[in-house]
Length: 199
Image (tube, rainbow, N blue to C red; front, side):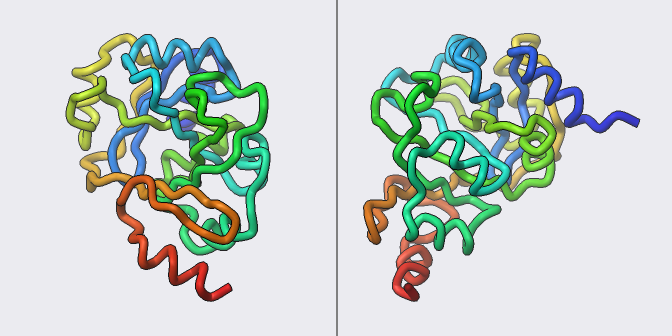
């Protein structure tokens, strides 16, 4: 029997959009390698121009396909908190679809802790976008029906993970051996600093 993530990965490969569960809220997925797919996501979701779009990866090796550099401090944080709700903001590789970086020169990446999200990235074998599955200003969906109400048939596949816990991933920029908190979330700043203090 075909896994639900097989159909979702096929839709992503074709340039379509997928809604899937993460460990916080439902995300809106596009193949992050495809400029056309990412532009389609922006058109459907109505994303703010100046806000980069984070991507989900399978592991550090996949992160290296979108990040120009992964400093030692970022590797230590990834080893402790991935898979999980920590987005690391790293220098971006050249040539990525423009909305992913929004002119910042950086890319936000994380390894998802939800099994369906992880399976989707693994099946596609490439990074998947993961903004919350809602238009700007609307409430991020914790149930699949809420995401379906936002996007209807403009999304090709909806993966149901039940009711999700809510909240947001922590977003942290790594600058040398220092961490700068860009958005508080499920992983606390104290936890991040404790890992870096361990050396």
